[in-house]
Length: 149
Image 1 (cartoon, rainbow, N blue to C red):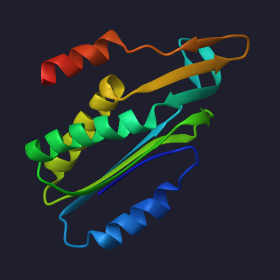
Image 2: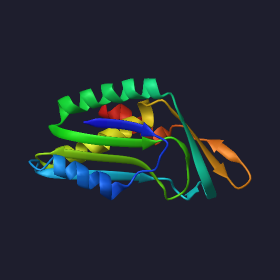
Image 3: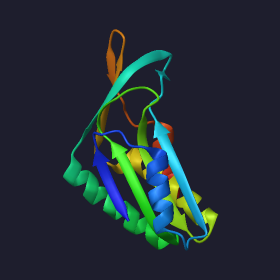
Image 4: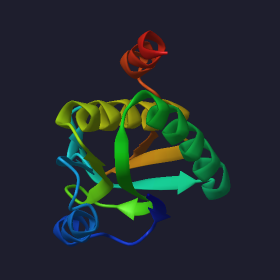
């Protein structure tokens, strides 16, 4: 059970294979990869800059995971979230979950990603060709969050 916030890129396949070897007894291993979109609001994204208050983000993440572990029967997880400058199509988030049954793993990942969008201390700035924009929480994400909690 590991959480990483890092500037460095990561290899999905390598992390998946290592995780799978450690979790041979699970009935299901599910992964999610989040990538930087090349276009947002009809604007071409050059890169995004993610700032993080790492100490607070780890505390928040541990609280969220503790809550989700009580809700779903998860055997193990790996979470990697990048910060710093990330270019379009680069990986920004990796979540891998081991569980006995697939539904538990899928639900854990879906809820975790929803929580990440609302509760973790990140600041994201999308840089375009001639300007930039700070990314704000979407009303739809907040509504999803409120209906689940």
